[in-house]
Length: 313
Image (cartoon, rainbow, N blue to C red; front, side, top):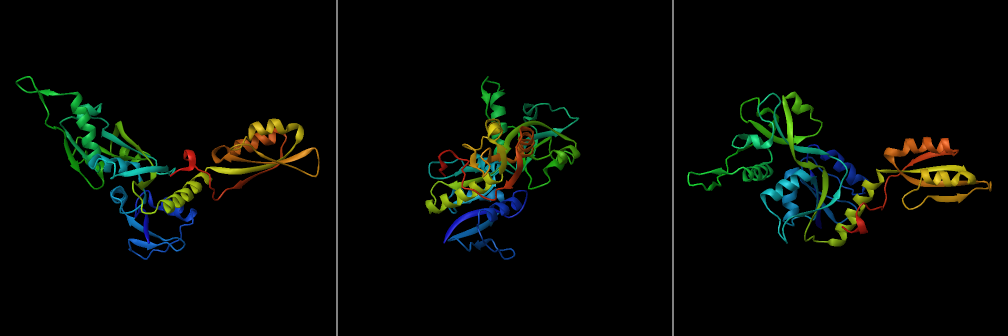
């Protein structure tokens, strides 16, 4: 049995991760509070872990694939720099979970730039990235000893908080924070404003550098990739006079080319083409204006279309 895939147990990444697994036909049942579930239709065990722990288990090769946030991957690498044999490789953008790890300060305060916080108190759930951020800032503004030599002591004070980081400034624990921001509503409600972005994050599929079963890893990754791609496209089908086909093909060029089939009426053809979902309504309007009839959008549930060059995982 391969311990192939781990996913977050809770939080902002959990529900969509479940949808991706279901859409990829990874069938499993999990009993309440169990951390491991066996997949019914593949020799795979799913391991359920907090998102922050997933890069560690994948990076050490304990499991082959994991779903987590890019912010967690970056934090893990800041604390445990990758080597040739250790570390996780990001192989797929899962197209959800977008957020930013930002430097936030009181909106009416005196801090305008991240460098203004050097030597002050910073609270965060990302101590590795925070230290890297301020180490780089401090390196740009060296302080001098009496002998004229730069002092290398790290000045900024970093406090780890496991949650509710946005309250740290109001409660006097911190002068600024580094925390994840999605809409920004929580930060604004706490009287904070962003002055810099440390990492732009999203949900990603990561892989061990030495997977136990490369063929199985490729199969699962290809399924997930195909499901993600399918959510981005719809199949647009319509009938159109041959005389207007050239114009219609400009509206629906498809992925490589539209599929064109003759009808019993020699003056008409049927056309089908893949269209990005975010454009489908406008495309259908343009086809109707062009002279197309019987225009339909058909949902695509799954695919084996790869978002990666060469379809290599």
